[in-house]
Image (tube, rainbow, N blue to C red; front, top):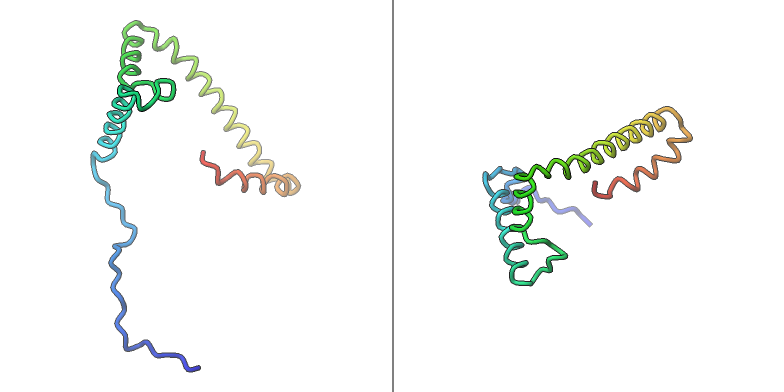
Length: 123
């Protein structure tokens, strides 16, 4: 079968504009405020259980009272400490495993498939 000659046809113009995202100021903040308002309305109306999602106004009220009383840092510092310690040990473990994978072929053969399998999991 002979090939058709498409040289006489006009190409279809691309109308999509390509992937050229344009930043729009304020949309993220507006969406965040809208989600907070929906959560507030949903918890006040009983559509959302307070056990599932505490009322945003109650959370802000509690945060404000803890800040005024000085107890905010008493409760926040242990959490930040756990975060720092966990981050430190996670980074050290990752660097150590990365060095071992880079230096030893048997470790590389064993761990690279595991890393590849874990990679698609959201961080």
